Image (cartoon, rainbow, N blue to C red):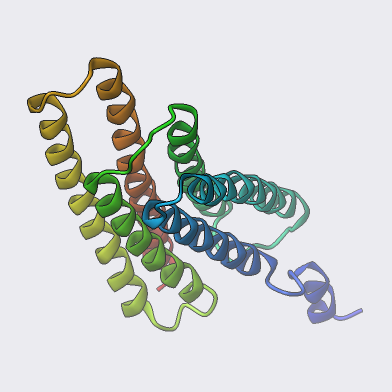
Length: 215
């Protein structure tokens, strides 16, 4: 048996890590779209239906992340460093976790109306996750490094926008006559929504590290 035949036996037959990361990215985009639908929905019953889909998305993300770790244990050769694969999987999973955490609190805290902060923030989240999806898809061939870099720069910009929105949202909460219990509820939700963009930035930082190593 020749060396090339032996090597081929160890190579991932379908570049499974790229496929899994692309599936995770698609799932995150779907979660963000459903989150936006919930923010735009005026019917409280239908709004809750949209929010509950984020729990399904988070579970799906857990399954895909677990599959990444299984493949890490089974594949001798990986497309890039094992540490980077693990870090990217964890960062993407955190994005799903915080989307679910935000939606869960909206349901459990019985938030009756979604204010302008939530509606503006979910748009930023949607844009940030969309840029993250573009960066992830470009990893497969790593031929368009400029597109990856531009997506990562955009994610950083969206994180800054989210910071500004959070500051404005908290200032409004603490300066207007908001019931103390309602204030605590909204503050937690605001902060969880902003953390989603932080986690997108964490994932972008991992991707930038990967392209620096392999470009």
